[in-house]
Length: 551
Image 1: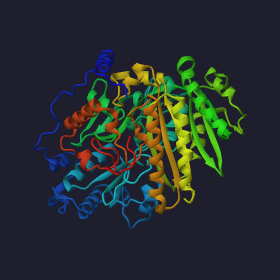
Image 2: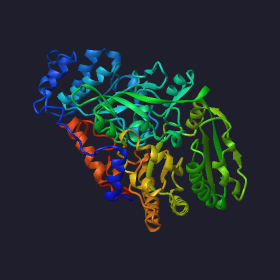
Image 3: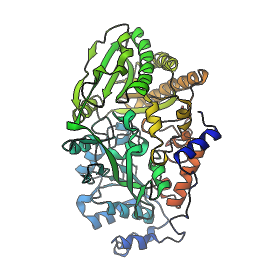
Image 4: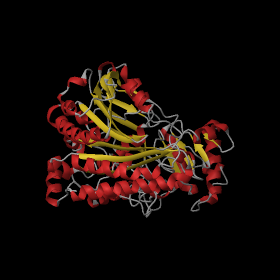
């Protein structure tokens, strides 16, 4: 990646930011967890089994912590393994790999302050926890935890619009479809996910590509402020003016710094929720090769001519026929006339299907959701490279060469998908002090970043290793092609990464060091590294040293 020290310095000066994390750790070494719980109205002495649990860790400790939560907040707040509600919760994850995980209990806080108690109680009992917003991650342990406490935000679904309609305050139990529906009546929207059932929390803290990103940037770049439960149990605000280092870290740094209990999001005008979009379906090898060139040309057209447009390209094979699915979308109605789409007029054959039409944001996210069924085994696995039609063509060749080894896998659908962080998106990453994704060099060089993903679903656990191995080989070949063509990039998009990938390391050594410094200040005890072990941590992949492709 292009990350010279002079480039970074110029960009930092231009943005008016400092990479130095200032201030002493916010927690004293002698911090009293029991006293902090008392301050939140949780009397530790009333739960005699809790007292001897400090500095231990066991399933028994988690069972005791679950019992204390149940006593304190009532039976409806905690689901146990013997209850039907527990089975329903565990079985409702999008990915069956997440449903393979069985916590000691599921805690359903009804207020942000209860999340504070959960964090402190976890520290007292040394019981690990995981947090579920929408639960749309593909791999086990991302928003679930074996033997610990899984926190479900299903009761934290508030959506409040400011009086001037410029800021929407959204709690993390919401999915994007619900948020868009709540805001549509006021003719506004926010920058968020493109599928109805994806949760607000994970998408936003991992980046967040939107239908409107070339106009406004990623979801994380449109957060005015976060309300965050810290390791101390305090609820603190992170914004450009208040705790700005934490604000920077949360814009793509994942779950490493605290638990966000409210996202204050900039709104965008969207009268009636109306926009335009839909898919084009092409078949055959010639169409796929042409699609690589048309995609590349469209990314350039969006940057030069029309920031309202966006797209993704997905490729697969069915019954021996290669298929390219092109999703085009536009930030207002009647987007089909945009000059952004000119390159698709030169395709060698007409599309076999065309669903592009005027839509509403709510309806569009619902339709996209229908192409992602629940309850199957899932893989997301990604990399990036600097904009290159040649590398897309190389990626197609690698993908179709390798997936034949999976012909025996029951219920398999493998997909190779590509979309772009266009130059307008990269420019908007500089807003409000920037984000930690490490893409300044690409922006300075005037190169869009292509985010490529191998995705797959299948039916049987016994086929997991075969799918992982093939996807790893595909990505290894794509990476080699990007290096050979001078288009290599280290960056891995968190929301498409696999359990084998060290996402934070892909942000570059400087940004990783700064993220670690932020964590050392706001979480010196390492609560969100040790007691919330799932997902992408500061120093490791969820499954480190796997031997599979990393980045």
